[in-house]
Amino acid sequence: MSEQRAPLTEIRYRQLFPWLLLVRCGKSSADPRKLLLAIIGVLALTGGWFAINWAFQNAYAVGEGAGPVPTPHIALPWEEGGLMERIWLIYGDDEQTLPVAVAAAGLDDPPGLLARVALQWSVVLTPYRELISPFAPLFSARYPESKLQLRIPWVGWVIDYGLFLHLSALVVWTALVWGIIGGVIARIAAMQLGRDERVSLTEAVSFCAKYIPSYASAPLIITYFLVFVALICMVGGWVTNIPYFGPLFAGTLWFLPLIAGIVMAFLIVGLAIGWPLMVPTISVEGTDAFDAISRCYAYSMQRPWNYLFYAALTVVLGSLATFVFLLFVQLILYFSYWAVSWGANDQLLARLFALTPSFLWPIFPGAGEATPADGVETIGAGLIAFWVYTMALAGGAYVYSYFWTAATAIYLLLRRDVDATDLDEIWTEEDEQDFFDFETQEQDLGVRTESEGKPAESEEATVGATTSEHESKDNSGEQSEGVADPGSTGQDGPGEEPGSEGEQREPKT
Image 1 (cartoon, rainbow, N blue to C red):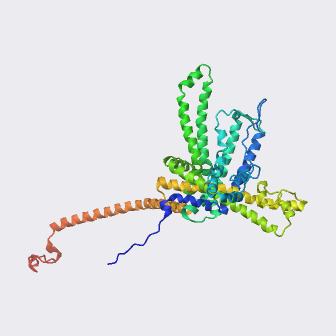
Image 2 (cartoon, helix red, strand yellow):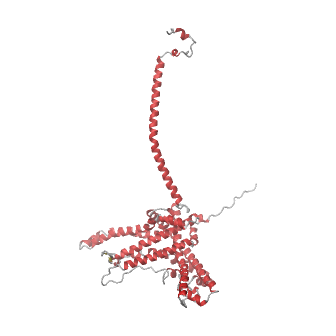
Image 3 (spheres, rainbow, N blue to C red):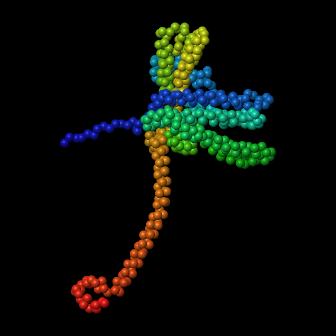
C-alpha cells in the first residue's frame, strides 16, 4: 500500500515574524500622495512658526536691562541648515557628501558602507525632534524668560508669562499640523499595510476630517493637564514666600510636590513615547482623543521591550530606505541634466542652474560659476530652481512620510501583541454605517416591541374574559344536565331499549 504524502503548505512568514511588516514601510513611504502630504506639512509647520514668532516678538514688553527674548526658531527647508540640507548631507562628510558619492566610495568597503548608512538614526528621528522642539523649553526648569510681559495691541493690556503663551501657541500649531497631516498619512498606511488596499487621497482626507479635534487634542490634553498640576504646585510656591510661615509650610508638606512630580513625570514620559502612536490610533480605530491616549499608554507600558525592538528596527530600516530614496532622487536630477546637456550650451546651463540649492551643485557641472545674463534667463533659472527644489524637498519629505508610516505599523504590531487583534482589523466607513444601522434596528425593534406590548396585553385580557365566560357557561350547563331527564331530548339514552322511555311518558296536549 503506497503512502500518501500531504503537500507542503506555504510558510506564512508574516504570521511567524509579524515584525516583517516594518520592512514594507520603506516602499509604502514612497507613495506620491504621502510625499505630497509631507511637503504640505513641512511648509505649513514652518510658515506657522514664523508667523507666531513674528507676532509674539513684536508684542513683548521687555524692560530695561533685559536681554534678547529667546525665540524658538525653525529654519526654512531651503535655508542653510534647513531640512533639505540636513537630510541630503547627513550620510556624507567633507569629501563625499551626496548619496551617489557615498555609495561610490563605499564600493571598496561594503560592510563599512552598510554600517555607515544603516546607523544614521538621527535622519529617522528628525520629525520626532521637531515634534518635541516646542515642548522642551515649555517644561525647562527655572525659565525666567517665561515671566516676560506680553503687550496686547489695541487693548493696552500687559500679561505676565508671555513666553509661556508664546511656546503654547507653537505647541498647539505643531499638534494641529502634524495631527492632521500625520493622520491622513497614517490612514493611507493603515489600509496599505493592514489590508493591502489602496485608499484614495480624497477618501483618506474625508475620513480624517471627522476626527480633527481628536488629532489635535490628544497630545494637548496630556500637556495642559500637566500644566494644571504645575499650577497647583505654584500656589504652594506663593505660600512659601510668606515670611517665617512659608519655609515651615514648604518643608512639612513637600511630599505633596513629590507626588505631583510622580504624576507629571508619568505624563511627560507617556507623552514622549506615546504621541507618535496617538495619531495612528485615531486613523486606525476611528476613535476619540481619550481612547487614543488610553491605548498608547497601555500598549507602550505593557509591552515596553516589544516597543523598543520595533523602534530600533524602524530606525535601521528607515536609515537604509532614506538613503536609497535620496540616491534615486539624485540620479533623477543628474540624468535630467546630463540628457539636456547633450544639446544645450554648457555655459547657458551653468547660468540656468545658478539658483538651485548650493549643496546640489556637484550634480550639475558648472552650476554656481555664473549668474543669469538677463531677465529672460533669470525667469528660466527661477523655474528650473523651482523644480529642483521640489525634488530636493521630496527627499526631505520622505523622512516624514516614513516616520508616520512606521508609527502606524508599530501601532498595529503592539495592538496585536497586547489585544491579539489581527492586523487587518481597521475601522472603515462601511463598519461605521453597519454600526449605525445596527443601532437603528435595535431602536426600531425596541419601539415596535413597546407598541405591540399593549395590544398584546389587551388581547390576553380579552381572551381571559372569553375563557372565563365559556367556563361559566360550561359549569351552568353541567348543572342543568345533572337535573334534567336525559330522555327529554327525544333521543334514546345509551344502553336503553328504544321506546321504553317513551311508553312511560304521557302524551302532551
